[in-house]
Length: 303
Image 1 (cartoon, helix red, strand yellow):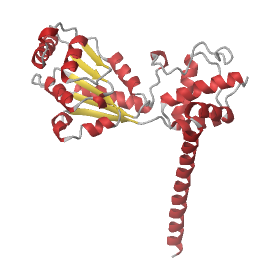
Image 2 (tube, helix red, strand yellow; image 1 turned 90 degrees about the horizontal axis):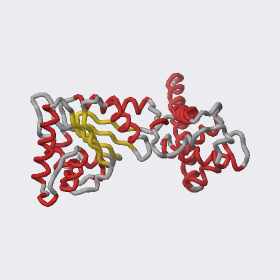
Image 3 (cartoon, helix red, strand yellow; image 1 turned 180 degrees about the horizontal axis):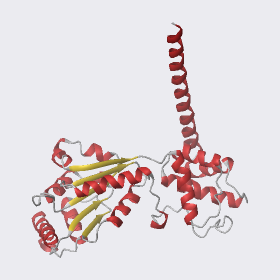
Image 4 (tube, helix red, strand yellow; image 1 turned 45 degrees about the vertical axis):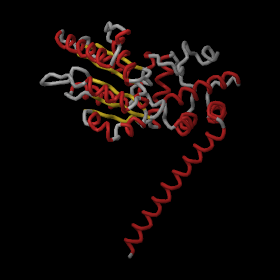
């Protein structure tokens, strides 16, 4: 609706994971480097955590793109499965034939282990990526650990990438999962974008959609950061609504006022005001501490 008005050829702020709009911030690059390093180590697990909407899926998609051609990848997007169902899904992802009438933990496990050995003999690596891993049951995680027991003198034949929200960290601290936790060779917690990165992120997505000039003013970008907290998914929602509202008001630029109205529509006035109050409260505390420290230093000088 607003594309022609703002000179765009595509919706730059869709929340669909379009690889054309991939934006790798410094933190995303660090996360990718940690995962890549972990997969090269001898352990069986690497882990990426982060709050909802911080870009974990972005990193995982980039990781899969960067894996070498001699890697077979299995991806599980819905981990709310029993141990038996998870093993069956792994078989499906790896193209392993099995007889459902004879399904058991043993038959599935034997089939997967056979596939891992076959891949190794053919010079193939095998990587299992599990998204939303915080939903995995402890007994399912233990079953995954057992799958990684197959190894050569140098490395595990199955590498597992666990991607999830911060609750995944707490899950792996459980006593019954301590053996699995010890096999995590690399872990990274993905933080939201910084204020400078938010502006760069917005400009990047607009440029991909062939925008000649960003319609977002500096004040609007600052407001987007304070309200979104630097979370890319929320940024997309705010920007998309702001462009729609700007078009309806025939505003060539998205200023602070339009951005605030759009944020009310997306998040609700109560939530927006809470986040704004939190920002000013934080600034007040930092300013108070700085003034207090300055007073103590000056007092020490004249003491």
